[in-house]
Length: 384
Image 1 (cartoon, rainbow, N blue to C red):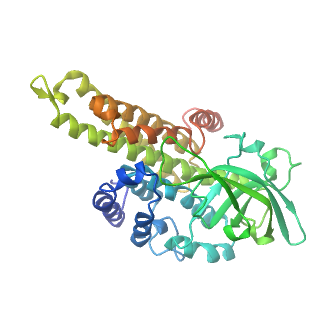
Image 2: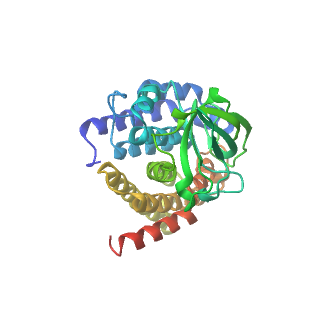
Image 3: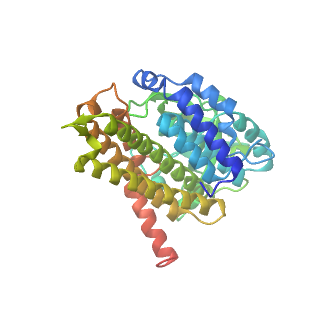
C-alpha cells in the first residue's frame, strides 16, 4: 500500500490481525443467529476504529480516506456487517467535519471519535428509493427551530445510533428542488421512533430499520452548518465517502471469497490432482483475482482524489459500481469452486454470496451510479 504512510499501514495491520484473531472464529455463529456483535463493536471502539475519520483536535488519530478504505476492507473480509456498522457513522463524521459549525463540531465529534456516540444518516424513503429529490420528509419552521415530519427507511444502525443526519425539505417550493433541502442533526432523545426492523437476505447482525419523525421538535442549531438549502450538495459530497466505503466493503467480501476459494482449491482433489489444476477452476481463480485487483485500484484512486480535496463523484461512483459487481461475480464463482459445499451453511462462501448484493443496491443502486458517472463525464468533458 504505497499510498499509505508507515503509521497508516501499521493501523491496517492491527485491524487485519484483530479480524483474524477475534472476528473470523465467531462470525459464523453470530451471522447465522442474526446476533448484534456487541462485544466486537466494543473492541472496535477500544481499537480506535470509530475515531479514524475524526480530524484533530477532536480525534486522537485521524487517517486518510485511503487508509480508512483499507481498514474497511479488512473489516468486511472478516464480516461485512462490521464494516456496515461504520458506514453511516463515518459519512456523518465527514459531514460534520466539513460543514458543521464550531459548536456542532465541539458537541459531537469528540464523542463520535470514541464511539460513545454513534451516528447514521437517513436519506431513503418508502417508495422513493434513490430519487432523493422526490422526498417528502419536511421540516417546517417554528419560532425557535423546526418541526420535522416524515419517514425514512433502510436506516442501518438505527436503534443504536444516537445521532441521525436527516436529509429533508426545508423549502418545498424551491426550484430546482434540491435547493430546498437541508440536513438536520437529530438526536435519539428528540423523539425518533424506530417503527420496525427490515428482514434481509444478508447483512445480518446489524439492524436496518424504518424510522418515523412524527412532528419532532428541533432547535435552530440542529441545522447542519448555518444556511438552509445546502443539504443536497453536502450529502452528495458525503456520499463520495459513503460510496468509497461501499466499494471497500465489496473488496473485503470479494477478497474473503477469493482467499477461501484458493485454499479450498489447493486442498480439494479430484481425478488425482488439486482442483485448481483443472483449467476451468484455474480460470475462475485467475478472473477472480484480476477483477479484485482492478476494483482495488479504482477504489484507491477514488480515495486519493478525495484526500487531495478534488471532486470525486465520478471516481467514487466508478469504484462503487465496479467493485460491487466484481464482488458479486467473485462470490458466485466461489460457490461454483466449492461445489455442493458452497451451498452449505457450514462454509462461509454462502454468506459472501448473500452479503454481496447489498453493495450493488446500497448507497445508491448501480443503475443510479451509471447515471452519476455519465453526468460527470459530460460535465467534465471527455478525458476530464
